[in-house]
Length: 121
Image (cartoon, rainbow, N blue to C red):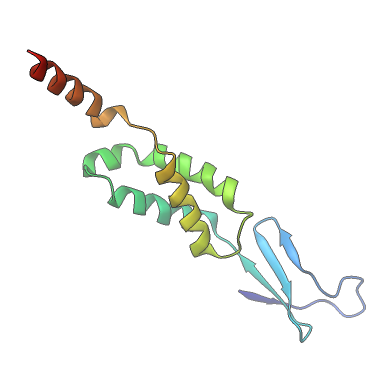
């Protein structure tokens, strides 16, 4: 968080709202503060959390770039909902786990087919 000082006798003496990745707030005492959200930090934290919950470490390493791209899209989708970074990360992770596709690398479809074929013989 940083303090913003305006030049005296300028038309703008306070700001409130979001411009780019910076959120400006004017406090009751007249001071203006700015909070800059670092997208790469939030995305990296979410990617790390997802990788830690994957079963196979090698698979998690191979899929890191794909996970990172998807998390970045989710970040763009949900970043306007909250100014709280922890809440934003929660929204991203919740969306990831609720809409996750089955990955072919897990082989669950092949295992299920093998089990069904072996039990039917």
